[in-house]
Length: 313
Image 1 (spheres, rainbow, N blue to C red):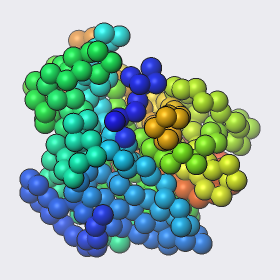
Image 2 (cartoon, rainbow, N blue to C red):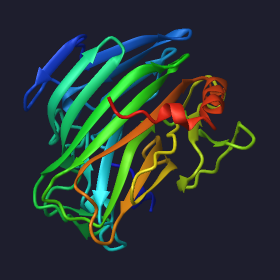
Image 3 (tube, one colour):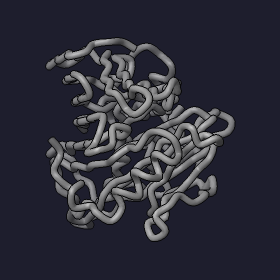
């Protein structure tokens, strides 16, 4: 089950692969040396090319139980208190109905994986199938498969830091869509429960500080770490000035019963006359390593966003 605001308020090898067709092979691995270990990233056809696994220093960083967790992206539109995000919610890895099964309602159109670089293009499934409900609210989508596309470009390593993902996404809103509000969950990471210590990065003090369980979003970058500080993952997005847009904001959640924790990075677009159709592109950096490693990366990136704003490749 997808674990988001509505609930608080989800392997193969193919180095050098390339596919360009509906139903492209989603099983791929990229890897690169990252400090004392390798970062190894695995995608699967089961998840339409979404990231199923990320390991470093012998540690799995991703919970991939159903089709709503993983390291992935999603979007929602025209949300209101009576029609919340899940009721119109294109999701990269698949739908709620896909659950723990072997296939995805999302359609992988293209995948390229070689060395430390991954690129995919996916036609996203709606999280709910027509007629399904979330928190009692009926799905607003008429089809199981949406016309909303996601292109992601992931590279292991950035500048002098090998222990980071340079992660870029483009959401493509179809030309016939009519919306006044868009919520782009540019990236979310669902982590195993042992990443149980939550931190926020203070940009003035240039250090990590304890963060409550919340849940919800804040303005400061979020880091989830193991209690001993040996393994941590964070999320950082430089300022990205775009019309009618707010963000980034960063969320964190702890789902005790489901034994999973989550962070996300969100941008929102509002325009009363209707938001433009077409592409919405966002860039993020995902630092990985020890807690001290992650803090050092955030410290270096904070205050110098200009070098981080070049467009999606």
